[in-house]
Figure 1: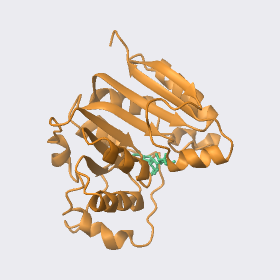
Figure 2 (figure 1 turned 60 degrees about the horizontal axis):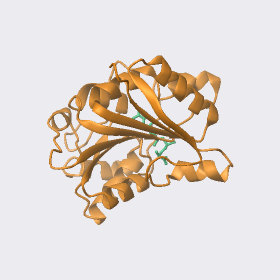
Figure 3 (figure 1 turned 90 degrees about the horizontal axis):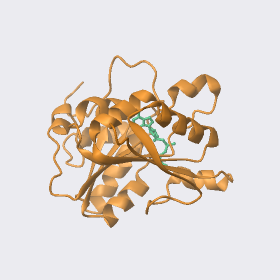
Figure 4 (figure 1 turned 90 degrees about the vertical axis):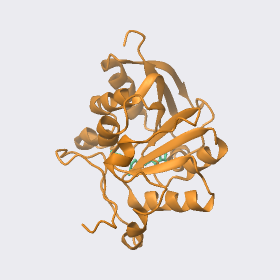
Length: 231
Ligand SMILES: C[S@@+](CC[C@H](N)C(=O)[O-])C[C@H]1O[C@@H](n2cnc3c(N)ncnc32)[C@H](O)[C@@H]1O
């Protein structure tokens, strides 16, 4: 591939994905702009060397969608550094434009598979919080294996979180909330600190998929997860 083009950072060995890649019109036209843009950590080397020591905290959002809520969060919290990981190219491009328009210096995008990025590329213990907001529920039983929240993702997050780090997960899909809780309980290095229903934890922004869930009358589950004491 021409090296003006940014590539999706993913593990070539992985066969089951938590996403289906789709590219809207216009994405291909814009993709070549990305590599030169400083809104991205666009290769393994840049991610390995990532350093945000001038900031009070580093927060990483997995699967930011179109990025609206992540951008607002970054603008409202200039003392926190944000990393957004996403595989959906239209979302990546929209967030990149948002960063440009708002001269936002505390948010960088990684175009990649979060399992690979958190498990292999981010410097160990670099993050204070990982946000997983409204991941695709893959509701059909035959697709449950594609849900992003698996023990493998928890292992990858464990590697990238510092000792007092947390994971903040939300879903509007009740069976997925149950699966999230069970996965955390199965992974002995994490424990659930708080589980609330229709009462957001912290001051998070309303996301696009949350609004959609609310319109359908779904309960919104927030889970705050921390590393176990004896880990
Ligand atoms: C249902 S959307 C939620 C978007 C946003 N968080 C919200 O609440 O509006 C889930 C997003 O996760 C992304 N995604 C799925 N698997 C991913 C992965 N392995 N790495 C990064 N992003 C992923 C999808 O492309 C999609 O944009």
